Image 1 (tube, rainbow, N blue to C red):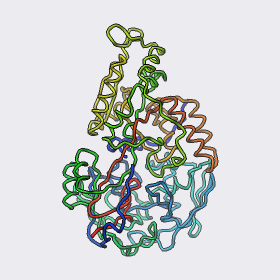
Image 2 (tube, helix red, strand yellow):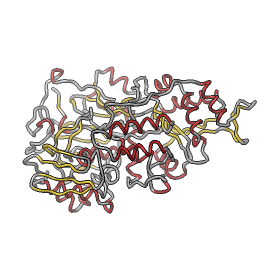
Image 3 (cartoon, one colour):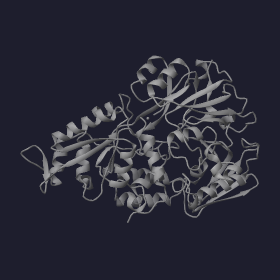
Image 4 (cartoon, helix red, strand yellow):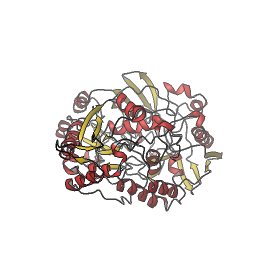
Length: 529
């Protein structure tokens, strides 16, 4: 029986939205030598849609996270390469069941109140309470975790072994005392320790953040006086990519994520970009009883039939990255030493043999049948992602040669929600999850099914993977990653997932440079002269 998980379905939909809207990898930002840093001015970043409710405890959509991340901070900062650095915490020490954080001195909130170790403990205990149903509950913290403050230290204890305890709780966004006492006030204001605080809201248009003059605790010793910081950050709603590209070239905005055809002219204009790795070519399979991919032979056959080089070039728009892990978002836990798997070579003849072995016989009409029924595969993909459709067509052409009846379905947000979480009427397609660590990954592949309130919408039953998940969860921090990588290999070898290719969701820079671990890091913004 699958283990239940408390991770809210909203968190899963957010993870899917993050990937379905993107493409992935990272490029180096310009150095100081490429342009003098100039302090002051307004940094304008485009967001694709209105962020809506700004409560960071409940934030779900990528656009909301991109905005609230401008005002709230965490104990630990994660670099784009997955390295951990002090932020609100000066230092920390951890074992598998306990982590002790020591806060930096002099931290204050945007309302001028003191930010204390007790504030940290209150945040963590609030997130650990299932009754509060925060975004973090069930994925990085749950009721097994408790926190106690003493002076400038916070001791976080887990009732069960938790090898990633420090980074899990250390990356939760911290809310100050007033906001935590009444979270409803956070919907249209901010109450954090960030370098920038929300100063004006025009719903559907702009969200303006103003730099504080008393900030001293940023990563890499950033303060309010650091050279190159803007005075104001403006998050502007720009729903059309071509419009955003025009504004980048004209210099009217400084940052925007562009994944479509407009990239060519931005590259031609000499604009640079940063980004995050995204498994744009990941294929997941509906293994629910009665669906074709419930049979591992069928999963293997149709996976090895695909020409990964040809299909990958199309779906990654010629800028593909070889997959190295199923973990693709920061903090990139257990990625550095992997992978412990290799993807198979394309073999169309072997694919046919496997389908024969699975009982899908090739008949005179060129189609495969079993018990009088044709082998029919519903292949779903994201309608707004321009490269999804042509790549899906290539897969269909290949599977046609094998006698498979392939039905292509372009999904919008409503269709994704209905098919994956309600009707379960899908078989495979360009469907991705993008966790920052293997534990979150396991909630999709080893958790309860959607009918039981879980996130395992693929209906995976992989005993070898489950056993390794249990082993990794009880291992020491030193041993856990090796076991998690073995577990990931089990998913690949059993064809529970087939990562064809990764690529980059580029965020283009114009007149400024910045880091983007997942979202733009406000303390890293430097305006260029």
